[in-house]
Length: 198
Image 1 (cartoon, rainbow, N blue to C red):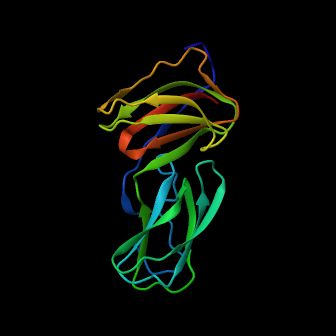
Image 2 (image 1 turned 90 degrees about the vertical axis):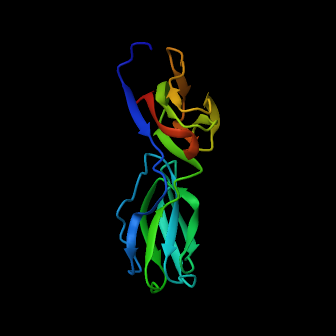
């Protein structure tokens, strides 16, 4: 690695399924947010579970997406002993509010599976290195320019075995002129640290 003075690191770790991580079970129409994220510095699908029938309620989830931009969605409540999932993925959650009284109780968690995204650095940067551990699932760690859906500039293939992640990256790093954003799948990664200019 070339001698650079402003290299920083950021750790990305899929949290795994947790049915009440965001908000413990309660009956208030505005859920008490216990953990508003970020969840391992990655986006997560938000889940709602209830032991009663809350299908007549609409829950408004407010937070941020993988780019850090504000987003809001309305989600129909779950039926008795059922779970519903948000359509969007959230880096942070600031509020979950029902449009009516809660039947019995409701709790909010994270799905902990599937494709996840996060922000390495939102401005011009170079990725200098990557270390981590993969799971026994073949896939890729993908880094995009500009946004979580931007142009792919760096792809790190995974072997499909539990092993260390330590790819060669040239001394000058890989330039992301409009921000670096990570895309990975929860089943593929235990955790990964990204080294970047910041």
